[in-house]
Structure formats: structure tokens, C-alpha cells
Length: 325
Ligand code: PBG
Image (cartoon, rainbow, N blue to C red; front, side, top):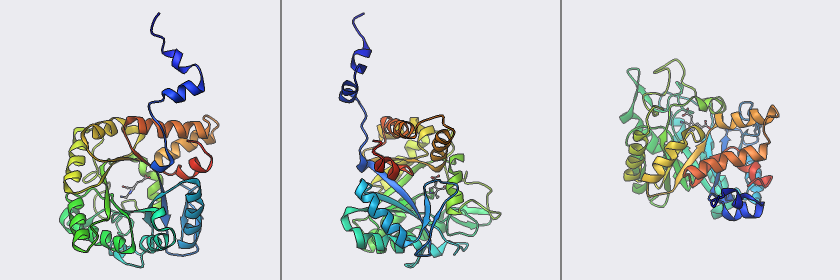
């Protein structure tokens, strides 16, 4: 036997030396759910370890997280101020805008503030776009997304992350940002975002599930999970329209998609380890069926190995705090 792969697995030092995939703190993004009450700090039942936070606890949390090495956050505004067109998401006083402003003022260039752009937390029907004649209307939605993106850029966001899956939204947002002097603000596009059952805990946290008006699900805008060529098409389109970073979402059940997009794209690729994946991992740990550090490291590494450069994960802060990487 001349070829013995086990030779390189003999010691931990040798395994580390030969590892093809490495994890680095800088590639992690921590999501946060921001609410209007400045002092609020309420744990979210559906996402253990994650809280609805107002600006004050958020600033404290981000400060300690920065010490552990969490240098990027992705903000989701959560509010009861809901209307058919989701315009409350465009106000300078909306939770995500206020949090962005406070974070940038306090931490400046030490922290990259990314903000989700979508209508679903701001619409009374819970859809990611404006509804007309019972359908989610693409053209009516684009100006609303652009206005929300501009308002977040005005608040100081470094990166705008549209998650709505309307056609042409990256171009609409890029044009709006450029016209208003925000040429430096980057776009991270949820390029291949699938209509997935793995978003359940998030929808509870963001109060963003589709309600009785309009389609019963998001299948007319989010992708069909039977498709992978379409993911490449979506990624190419977003890149052409001006996306600086592309994203695949969810991550773990979509490793093939991450690999496909990575092979075809010429810019950084992010993967979103979504709320349902987080819940699955936590469940195994809670039931004593897996060690948290080990399973989180494996989850991160698998997604990196598939081709993701950047990981958006609810486990970011704990992983760095506990030194799991
Ligand atoms: C909003 C949005 C969703 C997620 C991120 N942005 C939910 C959805 O599309 O219904 C899901 C994130 C997660 O599950 O962690 N459009």
C-alpha cells in the first residue's frame, strides 16, 4: 500500500497543517433584531441566545462582541408600525436607521454595519413587496425598496442587503444610492434566496410571516428549491446590476448551490446559516446528541468548504466568545 491518506491525519498538528479550509473571525456576520424601545432587551423564544434589542443594549452588546472579534453586524428592524406599502421602513426614526446611526457614531470604521432591506417586517400583510390585485407587484415595490435603502444609507449603513427577491431591485437600489451621493455604500444581494421552510424561527422573531392578504406563501418571488441553474442566473443578474457581494440562503441544505455560484461568480460570496439551521443545531445540543462547539465548527466549515467566503450566523458571537474557531 503506497498511498495512505491516514498518514496526514496522525496528529492534530499535522491535520491543522494540511487543512484545506480555515475559519477566520473576520468572515462572520452577526444578525441583530432591533426594536423601537431604546431600552428593550427581550430574549426571542424562537432563537435562543438572540434578543429583541433597543439601541442601548445593542450598543453594549456590540461593544463586547467587538472585543471577541465580531466586526460585522446585519440589522433587521422589527416594528408594529405596519402599512400596506411598508413605508415605515423608510423613516429616519425607524429602529434599524436609529441603530445604524448610533452604531456608526460609536464604533466608526471598526464595525461594518449591514442592514437588511425588505418590506416584510413593515407591511401589514407580511409580504416582501407591495400587493396589487392580490399579487406581489414588482414595479410598485422597487421604489419602496430604493427609498428604504437610501434612508439606511443616510443613517450611515456600510452595506445594504436586499432580501426581497424582486427582479431589478439591485439596479433600482444602486441607482438611488448613486444619485444621492452614496456611491461608496456597498450592496450585498440575497441573490439566490429560496422559498424555504427553514425561515420559521426568523419569521416569528421579525413578525414577518405572510398573513391573510395576498399569496399564502413567498413562492412567486423566492426561488424554487428544485432549481440550481436558476441560482447562477440570479447571481449573474445581481452582479450585473451592481451587487458587490452575492449571497446564497439557506446554507447547509444548499451547499451545492453555494459551490455552483462560487464557480461562476467573480465577487465575494456569503451564505446565510438561517434561523432553522440554528434551531436544528441547538436542538441536537439541547438533547445531548452533539457537542455545541464541535457541531457549530462543522456547520461553519462545511459551508466554507462549499465555497462561501462570508458566513452570516446567529452563532457568530458565541463562537468567537468561546473560541470555537
Ligand atoms: C426577509 C428575510 C427573511 C430572512 C432574512 N430576511 C425571511 C423570509 O424571507 O421570510 C430569513 C433569515 C432566517 O431565517 O434566519 N425577507
